[in-house]
Image (cartoon, rainbow, N blue to C red; front, side, top):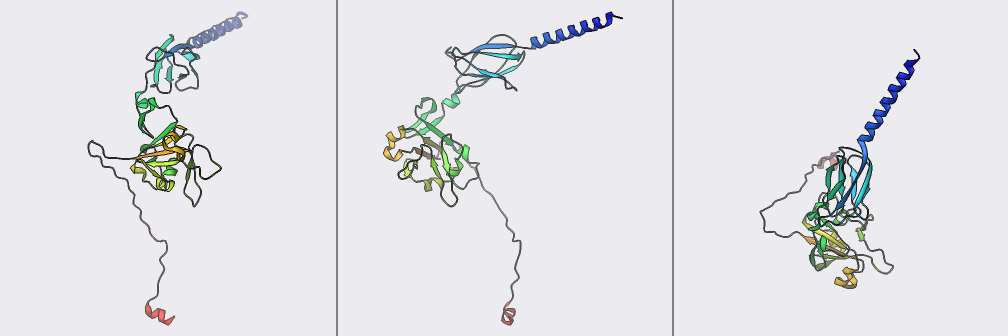
Amino acid sequence: MASIPSVASSTAANYLSSVAYAIQQQAAECSGTIVDATGEPIIGASVVVQGTTNGTITDFDGKFTLTDVPKGAVLNVSFIGYTTQTIKWEGQPLNITLKEDNKVLDEVVVVGYGTQKKVNLTGSVASVSSEDIKDRVQTNVLSAVQGTVPGVTVISRPGSTPSINFRGRGNLGTSEPLYVIDGTIADATFFSNLDPNSIESISFLKDAASAAIYGSRAAYGVVLVTTKQGKKEKTNISYSGYIALNNPTYKPKYVNSAQYAEL
């Protein structure tokens, strides 16, 4: 009878040991190296276990280490300008090669002297396409671009035309940027009255390079607007509209001429 507790305790110890061993086998340390197509290490690439908050970034040598990663876990590897990869980890060290996201790098941005690809830009330029603003229910374009571009502030006051600011406010005169629509100088009122469906893209030139093109008028930045033009493609027809029906809640009853004379 005295040996029963010792047998039970031994069985429990063996069970706990096996559980601990299984957990240790399931969750291990995941390490690896991330490079680009030329073999250069990518610094600051993000590595996250899918569905969790367990993640890290690569160091100066492109290496990373993640703890408590179960075998068979899926890793999301991403970095700006590169295509995100999803990799299943089976316990071995990883050697990951990220490919450039050509769709992002080849995106054309309108600048003061023509168009450039994002990959070739050196100045501070932000752009908004028609897809970003066409579904916004706003009374003007200025209100539609609010919140779509970092560093661009749209000031809207009741009873006045909204104003835009992205290079600070001055003490003398106006702090409005210069508006250029299809190569023609315009003002904020004309810009805000544009039909959002007719806009191809809007570019915001936010650095001092804009003043080198447009002079002192661009001291507070430039808003470049390109409207839609005809293209040599198949015919595309788009329609956007709405219909409303109004019914009066109360219909007053009017007197006729005889009744009016009696009054």
